[in-house]
Amino acid sequence: MTIIHMYSTPVYTDNFICSPDIEKVCTDEYEYTSGSPKISVRKNIISDKALEEVKNIIKNNFIIYLKKLSIKNNFKFTQSWITMNDKGDMHGFHRHWNTFFSCVYYVYSEGNSLIFRNPNFIEANTNYELNFETQNLLNGSTVIVPVKTGDIVIFPGWLNHCSSINQSEKTKIMIGVNFYLTNSIGEENKLNYTEL
Image (tube, rainbow, N blue to C red):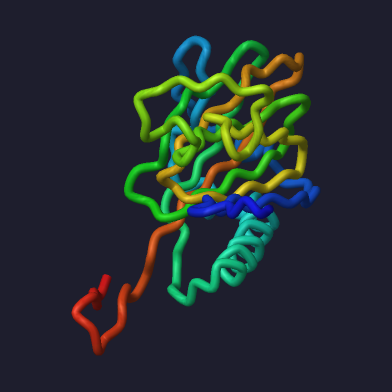
């Protein structure tokens, strides 16, 4: 017997420890709502010289991700930001609008998770609640990805996700980046071609 995982959502993970001079960048202004993370006001943080090593790690891993998906299109960095979650903070479910792919790099994370809402879980398109013996990738409504310092996660920007509540005494620091297409999409000899 075989169960085919149809319509999977490609999420890439790896780990690269680097030492960005985050202190220089963390002096930025932040937006803050109680219980939510502090989010940098500046939305092009990855262009900062202090983050050049992180930018290269993200770029190289994004190229690997695209190759694994056999995507030939060109992409560029669009928005980038820093979030800081103090103890008790979390980031609720959200998606990244007007972006193709998103990436998060954990400068510091201890005992935290990135939680994805499964768009294809078995109950998603029914009007029934089923009783499961155990939750797994085939039947769960969420997928929990534990994250630690140095983890990089790349995923489609439309995929709903949230962070777990930071239980650590230390502040969780994450750098986020969005990607969008450059040049063109489609094929010139077909009716699907568009220059960007």
